[in-house]
Length: 231
Ligand SMILES: [Zn+2]
Image 1 (cartoon, rainbow, N blue to C red):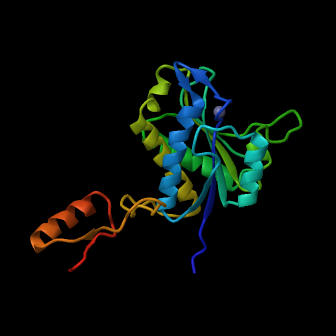
Image 2: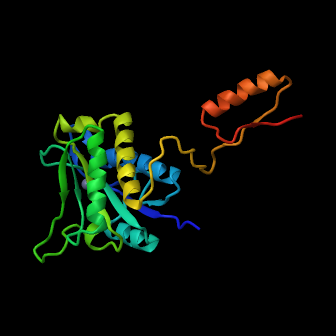
């Protein structure tokens, strides 16, 4: 029996909290599509996922941490974008290192493969010597905060300024997470069945040739469970 892996995805900011705002971008609106693609990629590989939000809504950082700890994931990632005039992606992990450090390094390695430069995997401690970020300090699971790009850098923001690039970023983060979980990335894993989506196509047709054409089109469109029903 395989034990399913569990992942918590935090989507930075939302609702009344826009996060970083620069160059016409609101961080909350950049973070969300990246995280949603990341979630669907993980789900496609059989990973159980919980995401902090799938729409534009606010959740307090404490609620997010509580939600994460209740879910008890194997790993947790909070997805953000940066400001401050830097250039490139960075990822923060706990000062205790371990899986969190590996996770941060794997995610940055995958992000570099889509053309973004890396500022490195980092730790940040507060005046008491504890991890400065609550999401890293107060989550029980190995947790990483990913900053994909600097929204206030006109060049750097170009890595996340289109839907296709946000999708690529989400896939890159998912690949880094999957690698950390020991799950091989599959380019062509079948789509995960989501509620409300029809995956079973029954083709009724008088002539066999017509039915097979419709079946081929259905399969090409992603209906993996398509078949010809006789009669
Ligand atoms: Zn943020």
